[in-house]
Amino acid sequence: MEIQQLGIEGAFVVTPRQLGDPRGLFLEWFKDAPFAGAAGHGFSLAQANLSVSARGAVRGIHFADVPPGQAKYVTCVAGAVLDVVVDIRVGSPTFGRWEAVRLDTVDRRAIYLSEGLGHGFCALEDGSTVIYLCSVGYAPTREHEVHPLDPAIGIDWGLPADELLLSVKDGAAPSLAQAHGSGLLPTYDECMSFRSGLA
Image 1 (tube, rainbow, N blue to C red):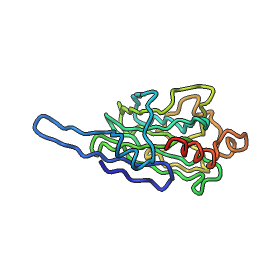
Image 2 (image 1 turned 180 degrees about the horizontal axis):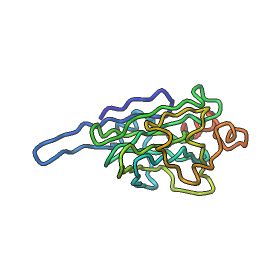
Image 3 (image 1 turned 45 degrees about the vertical axis):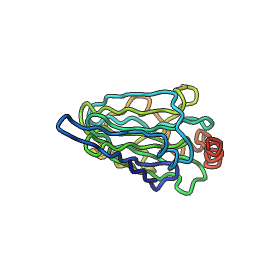
Image 4 (image 1 turned 90 degrees about the vertical axis):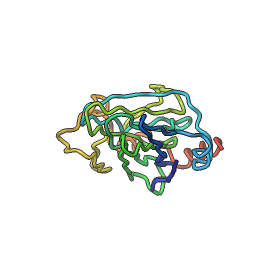
């Protein structure tokens, strides 16, 4: 597999090697040794999630308090999604920046995002199925959202705005500036300090 860091520190795109024959294909979508070599630490699995989404469904931008945060390793096993990482870490050199990677059944890429980064995706096809490994289990009191259509972030979700479907919770989420003003966002220093303890 090939692992490349994105322009946001702590986020990687993983492109697996696909082995095909007349029966179909095989790939390793996660492997600890190359992952640890790129990230500087292993991945501790606490929960595995699966979502199936209609075309236009946007899930996110979600993040968790640091510590312990919630790192995610995400791939799409049916359909296609535009997966988005947002740097919401106060004090980060790339604060407010976003990057997107198409996850689909052609390249079968995965994205890893470390603790403290915001995450969301938009389903580009009906039945888009995303699976993601989580370093920490879901804890409602530590989970937060930033509005996925915040114009100050300016994410291009890959579909016209009038086709996007948001949950009630995500639609009521604060803007990045509001989340910052209310003290919800993690700081870059606390995220880096937490991750240094994982090595």
